[in-house]
Amino acid sequence: MVKIFVITYSMYGHINKVAESVVKGLEMAGAEVGRYQIAETLSDEILAKMHAPPKADFPIITPEDLPKADGFIFGFPTRYGGAPAQVRAFFDMTGCLWMKQALTGKPAGFFFSTASQHGGQEATVLTSLPFLAHHGIIYVPFGYAHPNLFDNSE
Image 1 (cartoon, rainbow, N blue to C red):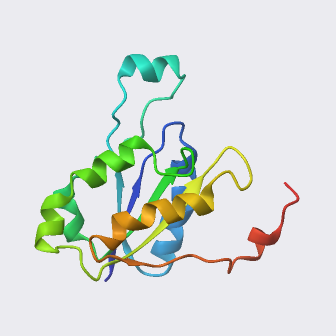
Image 2 (cartoon, rainbow, N blue to C red):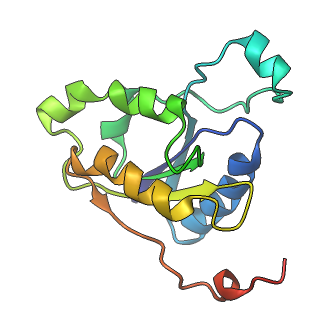
Image 3 (tube, helix red, strand yellow):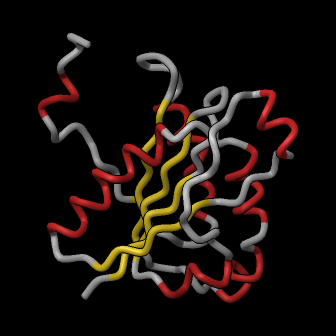
């Protein structure tokens, strides 16, 4: 059975809500799913001022966990057309895996959320690809296969 890790960073819970559907789809396809979150870098004081809810009860991913998966789906919000600092900090810790080429050939995809339509999703893909490319991870885009992606009524 293929083991896919769904790894998210979600300050307000929106990404985790989307991840529920991602996990459901993977499980329906027969995958074994590991659910993880990226560690928070902001202090509790700052998070309280931002009215952020408590974090979900998923284990915190570490670089040492990544080689255990056959593939990954990363979900995080867009911050000015790029990944949030928390995601960047996580990938900054993966140099030991890069040195060993421990992730080469594994597939990965992304999903994002923004506060507006076209609020940076496409730019976030482009600015996140180097996280994968340097590790030799194969990017698998979701594309526009689902018909709801063409419905702008909401």
